[in-house]
Image (cartoon, rainbow, N blue to C red; front, top):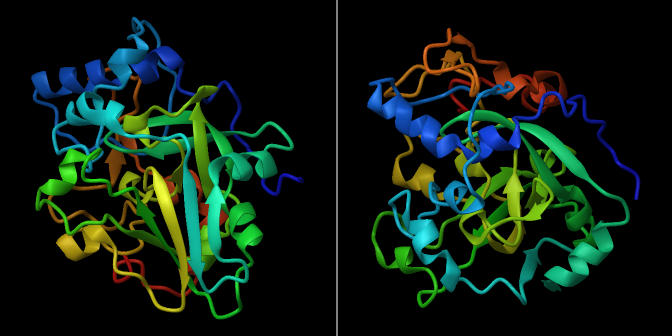
Length: 301
């Protein structure tokens, strides 16, 4: 299967695994030093950091289905059954149905695919994801001409995901993309990280990665994909539409209501490294700006 997008990042750009594993320690140090949250979106090499264990990296996560505390996902993630796993694809598709994870992987892994993306959650780094382009999966299902949006739902299993008993969000968690965003070759379904399977608390067995958008758009542990004509309501937009728009693109010219997004501090540069300008679309402006040509990005934020 031909690769439609040629990655312009090299292994020299990838955040070293030691630094990636050590991000909990980095953020804790920032909090202790009184440094404001809200790291930017580019990545940089980090040196001189002692690597955390694999267990340590998986104890600082956002995954509200397990709970709102940073340690809740690691505490409860073992309860999530990820094998077997299937994804229901429905709506405006020619081949609706339940797609087994094993069949999806068999169809997609005709070549090794490693994507080195700048990514943003609460910190900035470059991460090597293993996975495949979402477009390949949607093409398996046969996208119909009337489809304009793609909605995603994760697993909602009350006996395995204790966080869904809370009222912090209107469950199930829902995210969505415009169809052209979903079909863009930068949009991937990630199944691994650093060559290892994604841990449950990080979105196993399959999660979305949309590298020019903020992290909450990259929904975890997907069980359903629906093609629709209308824009789907998304969870954070419903919860607080003034702060979280449908698009949620990285845009340094539009401030979040509670902080500026105009500059960033790179992981690996040290706690007191100078801030640098945040890159439009998280550094992928050349690849994705055409998707929003003619749109007012302060209105469609």
